[in-house]
Image (cartoon, rainbow, N blue to C red; front, side):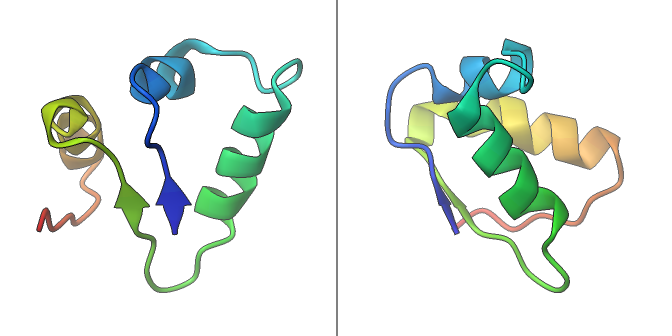
Length: 64
């Protein structure tokens, strides 16, 4: 589970450089090593952008 509680976390995830951002590197590893289920916790007002990104890439999502 990734917790992206800070405002702007999604922008950081979308635009930061993992070569220079250690937190982003940890998020990347957590997301890419997942075998069955990944959960991402983030503020409701920031859920549209990652949901659209995943949907565009045909990744099944469920927002609860």
